[in-house]
Image 1 (cartoon, rainbow, N blue to C red):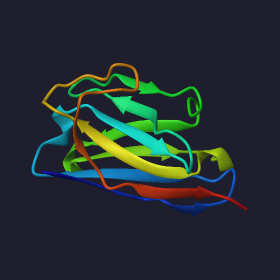
Image 2 (cartoon, rainbow, N blue to C red):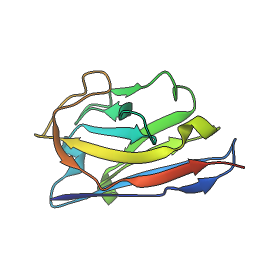
Image 3 (cartoon, helix red, strand yellow):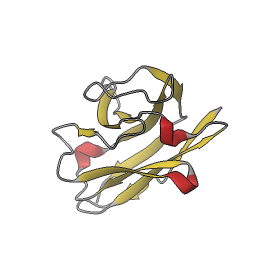
Image 4 (tube, rainbow, N blue to C red):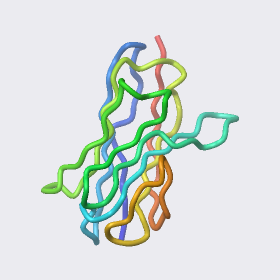
Length: 125
C-alpha cells in the first residue's frame, strides 16, 4: 500500500502546478486524502482535504480560491491544482490518505493511514 506524489518543481510567481498523489494497493476513491506542506523552519500545515466517497473539500485560507483538489478515480489519483503561485507557497508537499475507507476530513485534518514521500515546490523568479 503506497502513495506517490509527483508534479512538483520550480515555477515563477503567478504560475501553476498540478500535484499528483497516486495510490497503489488500495482504491483511493474510498479514502479521505489531504495535502500538507512544510516549508524550511516551519511546522507542517494542512493545505486541502477531500473526504472519501462524497465530494466534500476543504482548503486553507492561504490557498482558497487559488487551488482545487479533485479525484481521477480511473487513475486512482488525487490532484492538487495550484494557480497564481506565490513565493510563500514554496515547501515540500505531502499527500496523506485516511486510515479506513469512507474516512472524512475534519477541516484540513484526517486520521492518517498512509503518507507519501513528498514533492518539492519552489516558487521563485
